[in-house]
Structures are given as structure tokens and as C-alpha cells.
Picture 1 (cartoon, rainbow, N blue to C red):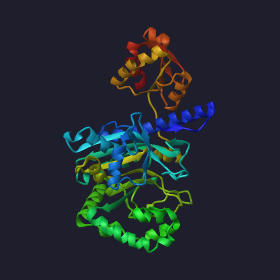
Picture 2 (cartoon, rainbow, N blue to C red):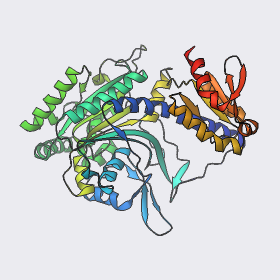
Picture 3 (cartoon, rainbow, N blue to C red):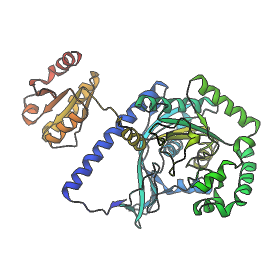
Length: 460
């Protein structure tokens, strides 16, 4: 398992833990918003394993779908080689076959949340344009990037309604969070099926090889194995060459053209604005056919946001908030059978960072925050929390914390109107303290009267 080599003083560690807790709450608020919208469309939550068998990754590698994102390998005590979850979307596809979900009614709509890990070169540039920390290492001091992902997938649906519905959910999630059209844009491209992909790759390879001497070092390397990556290079010389490069749209078969038209008609009907970006091929080789990204708009020199993705002229790539597309080839590699799969992934850290950059932070507010002090109180907490949940009371907690001071600070941060305080004394005599966080006024009431008392308070 990865270990931290970075040494910190006590105060630095406390500050880091506080930032981590804050990041987790913000990511939780973003995923909760996405959950609510996805559930309306019939998606259900599932858990995926934080680790995958290395054999699964080998199956993707043999199908030429392992891409440039390398997973973090680790060896178990028994000698089995595993990888830390490299992708929430891939985790759902693997779980589909492992748990025999093909026996369930289809199309199957599922969503999940996971922390994913991929190895990155030292001083690598991250998805949002910032350098990735190399303080953490896996195995032989290989730095890795960790990020939180919320993903959803529709399995067993071959029509373009799958792409349209997943795009709709992700776009509405962004809008609900405050990332409106002037802050983010949806980019779509078609990579085509096997029939139309081959002539495109051939034409693109010939075009780029004729200009290889003018490409940057990274693009010359990509030209050998994945020439389509050159089209999204941010180097100024490569961007100029990419402008006149062959486009997949010119090589699409009739079936792929019809599928693209159908998807765009869906989006037009749903009033979801989009931008066709022929240079976009995404990060994931396992995404294909129709692919999409939601990216943050780049601010222009005068301070206003750019209105068109085509006008990105900054030296760094725009922050990617979400991505998705067909994963049928990956499903075939992992399960050995044909399965139509469309997936979309929201990068929670990227969304939180973009909201923070625009000073819009995610609003994390609640009516009630539960505070406990002492082992007996902690044991009694779950029963009280479950009663509050069944009564429909919006309540947050931090049962892992022991400091009452820190718990009160968290209650203030999430904007709780009332704090419920359960200490050793209250746990013994079956009472609980209800405190108004704003005024500090508090009352001690019997636990069996808590629900009625809170309902009256909250409705005021």
C-alpha cells in the first residue's frame, strides 16, 4: 500500500487534516447533488472495490485499452498482485461481471463514488494544470495522483438515449452547483466505429508524420502509438498543426453519422449547449465512439470568460470537470462478451477547485449537527441518528472526531442551525442538549421528545 514519506510538524499535520476534512465535505456535497439528480433518472448507488486484480488491467492492456494512465500496483501478503482502483467507471464495469449483474433487468443504471489512483511522472502536470505532488509513493518511490471521482453508467442500452441521459445528468449537476454556461462548456467528438476509425488513423498518421520535425518532443512520442493525442497537445506549434489536421467527422460511416445526429437532436431538444471539438480525444483509451467532456471556460485577458471553446489560447489545457463516452470495448475486454456501456465521470476535486477559483464554493448547509463526547455517547449516537433519519431530519455528524471543539467548528462550517450534544451524562440519563449555534441558547430535553422538539424548531 502507498506510504507517506513527507515529514510534517504537529501543527502542519493538524492543518493538513483539517484541509482534508474540508475537501471531503465539499466533495461529499458535490456528489450528493449529483446523486439526487441521477436518482430521479433511475440510477442506483453501488459500491466498488478500492482495489482490483492486476489480471483485470492485463486484459485491458492486451486489448490496447490501458492508455497512458498507469495504475498503482501493490502486492498482497499472499503474493497476489493488485492495483488500486484507477477509474470509478472501470470499477463499475468490472463489478458488473464479477457480481453476475447480467442477470438483472436491463438497461442497468448504476452510480458510484471512489478515490482513484494513477502513477504520474515526477513534476507531471495535473488535469487542472497544476503540478501533482510527488510526496506520496507506491512501491519504488513512484509518485501517484489521487482524485475523487463520481461516476454513473448505463449498461445494456445500445441507443443514443444512454449518452443523452448521462450528459443531461452531468450538465444539470454542474448547473445545480453553479457552474453555468458562462463558466463551463460541453465538448463532444466522435471517434467512430472500427470501420471508420482505421482510415482516419491512417490519414492522420500520414499528415502528422510529414510534419513530425515541427512537433514537440511529447507529440513526437505520441505519434508512434496514439497519434490522436497530438491533436490535443497544448504546445503552440502542435496546436497550429492540429488546426488543419484530418477530422474524424470526414471519415464517419453512415451509421456513425446517424448516431451523432441523433445525439445532437437529443441535446438540442433538452436545451443542453454543446461544442463539437474535432481535436478532443480525451484521456481514456477505453472511451470511444461518441465521447464528451465538460471543461472550465478559460478567462480572457479582460477578465470575462471566453464564449467559445475554440478560442482557448492559454498555454495550459482547460480544467476537465467531467468526461464520458461508450465503454463497450472495455466491457468486452473485461467480460469477454458484448455489452453496450455508456459511462460518465465527474472529477469532484476539479469541480470543487473551479468553484473555489470563482469564489462560489459549494454550499454545505444543514439544519442539525450531531456532536458526541465520550465512548458511551458514541455508542448511543447511531440509534439517535437513525431515528432522526427516519423522521426526515437533515442531520450531519463527525463521529470519528473526539474533540468537542473541533465538532463545533465543523457545525459552524456546514451552517447548522442547531447542534445536538450528547455527552456521558446525557447518555446515562437519556437526555440530549439542543443548542442554537447562532445565539448559543441551549436546552436539555428527553431523547424520546427530540424529534417533536426539533420539528417545531426547524419549521419556525
